[in-house]
Image 1: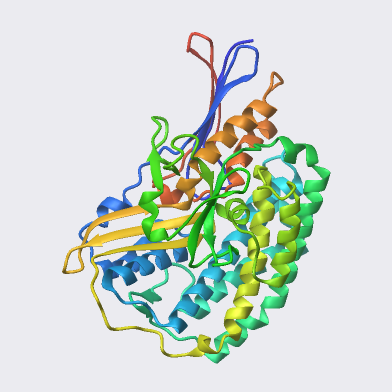
Image 2 (image 1 turned 120 degrees about the vertical axis):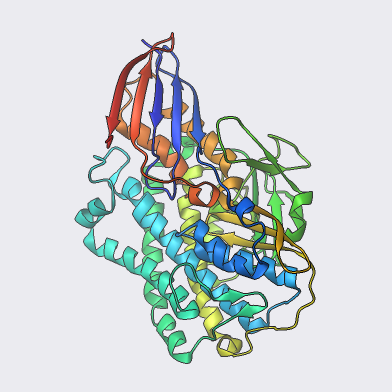
Amino acid sequence: MVAQKITIEPVTRIEGHAKVTIHMKEDGNVEHAYFHVNEFRGFEKFCEGRMVFEMPLITPRICGICPVSHHLAAAKAADEVMGTPPPRPAVLLRDLMHMGQVIQSHGMHFFELAGPDLILGFDTDPAIRNVVGLIQANAELTLKAVNLRKFGQQIIEFVSGRRIHPTFAVPGGVNKALSAEDRGKIQAGIDEAIKTTQIGLSIMKDWAEKNRADIERFAVLKSGYFGLVTPNNGLELYDGNIRLVDQEGKQLECFDGRNYLDYIAEHVEPWSYLKFPYYKKLGWPQGVYRVGPLGRLNASDRIETPLAQEEMKLWKSLNGGKPVENTLYYHLARLIETLFAIERVAALLDDPDILSTDILNTRTDFKGEGVGVIEAPRGTLFHHYWANDKGQLTRVNLIVATGHNNWAMSEAVDSVAKTYINGKPVTEGLLNRVEAAIRAHDPCLSCSTHAVGQMPLEIEFYDPQGSLIRTLSRNIA
């Protein structure tokens, strides 16, 4: 059999652009598969020279899927640079908007991006393995899924005044109070959102039970796990210390996010523009870890809302109390977090301070440096700013959620390719499983890279001497 090099470009149903190259042996098995993030990211550099108060307006443009995460991380960093801690009501409103972000992003990913694989099947014709196919298969469920995302987006809009690229959070607080009328509108959607999320949980659990063999062999990886926690090591998405546990669940660190540079370093590989963060004390690659829903649930001991805590108990039982290593369980973790976020919305709306107009601290105590940390839907997000005495930025450092998971996505792609492509004819469904290894992490590649225009899909076959012998392509102009 002639050796091949198979290229998957673009990877579909993710946010942003990436490609995969699968290097084959002559016997039809996989030698190695690579996940390439091949566009350049420049936000850190072109933010230099801007005023710190502009950053909550500039950085949401990094991504149209999770602009709230960048907006709030930037605002939290700016709070510290300017020395303006926000009043409690402003913190509650920021947290509330963030929960809307988590709900809309997680809901969209499970149903619209991952859902076609789980509900319709990995091997389904790609012409219908999409949202249109979901509508045809179950219009009622698809409508519920759309309404779940709508609920999250409406929270963002009612709180901040707009659904994407908000201008709401400013150094020292926020610029808009929540009205009693808008609080009531959000409250009216909570019960339906919980029911839809519980339907999603039932779908995922049923799929996992019926596809146990895939769950147990699809990129089961050993790593550390990383995420924000409450003082009781509960799941936290807006503010808290960062907890890192090892592959057995033992705590390695629990530290203030402001000190992240003491704990995190970044490795580089020549085949990707995206860096590989790792835990300094263990070094590369022993110090690799995972973030996002699976990472956060593994790094947490509990969830401090009742419905999500019941799901957390089941989560902790999946691997005998040890961290869950199965990549496909990212989807289950994502739904558990969605349930938590909806319950958190209900709790925030019941807080007496949520309607307060004490939303901005105008007193400053300029510090010149600040770090903003938040759990974006895809994982832990760092914004670190240095400014001169005029408030003009001299340096910017961003570590985005997708960057933390770069090792995990790369390992998952290689593992899945070697598991499923093993001497048999390479079908589209097998290649879709390789894509699904990336999709499970819900990467936001716009956060880490930037590309202009459309990328085609082209698969090239090479002989052992490296000569191109055949090309398959689609959507090539």
